[in-house]
Image 1 (cartoon, rainbow, N blue to C red):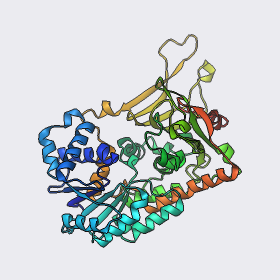
Image 2: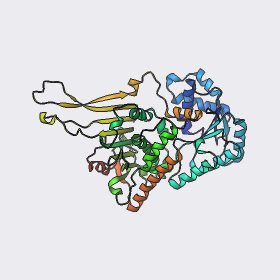
Image 3: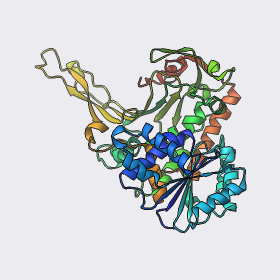
Image 4: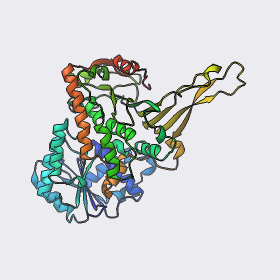
Length: 485
């Protein structure tokens, strides 16, 4: 198989992900001349429609979700020449044969993006195999969720492995397509001032927060069967933790980077029933106000009572040489005060401050890596306040910020899926998740869930618009840590 494919197939092409992310991303790549000449984009879903109808939907999605300055009718018309549609029911083998007829010769390479319910993964893969769309020229991208625990994840991976080798399999975590997440590697490994300090000798603790203002947004049945731990921590947050904590790879290639991430995930300290009460807090939002607007309780939105957690705060450790004794605090939830994804690297105090004798206090340095909604890197430093110091030296915290819009105003802000789709088309696997990564994540998450089941933990209530239950504040403060609110 050549590295670059000539056909991209989008399963679930009439769904929300395709409309908001996939089609606008492909349009953006086409506008920049990054899609291979002659690349065909074949959408498929259950709805019965033809090319013309799907193209109308595609152009509407593009118009609604790309910057106004990027859209024009000429570029849209050129993009739509690539776009085709084949109706397909994953439970009907005949549909796969029709798809194979439209694809034709696969020797130019085929990439398949599978954005369907996990319950349809095996039927879809069996249909692709029966239609001859699983050969060495074909690669498969899988959108989460990849299981609900280790056993179901392995079942999905086994079904995939029966038809596609690991080299042909591209598991997506869209956070890895975000520029600031990728920039974390550059920050650590391209700057001599950070990596020598990136150890337990200099770092007091690490915080990772992924907060959402939204509630269920029409995903009630899915979310209630999943919860915050499996929806956010298992994938996005553990991937962020692995990037923060990984050892320097020997080179920037897929095997080296992913090998180091797996080592971190396998070094996470297990949570037990004996220590879960001091290391994990779960919550569920009640009625409250977000952004000044009243919102209903989770159970009211769902339409029934539930013990599913909409908030998780936890403390964990990476038990290896570099991070021994450094706590990692993870926090995520729905109906929180704002939408935010950020990483805080809290450094230790200087071992001795000569300014104490002059009445000044030096605060420890802090590095903020903001991922969304605004991409920013901010380093807090101590500086002397200008003056003659007759009443003593005064120190003040000052912030050095590198905002993406400031430093890179000449570049277009891209959707994360642009990078991931282009990497899939070109066969670059570095920003995709390997099977052993997924299974290491699930093994740790299953341990947490098992421990809270033994301990009989149930979600603590919190009012919408607050930062979770008060116990989450205590989780950090009992160790002298304050969340970065």
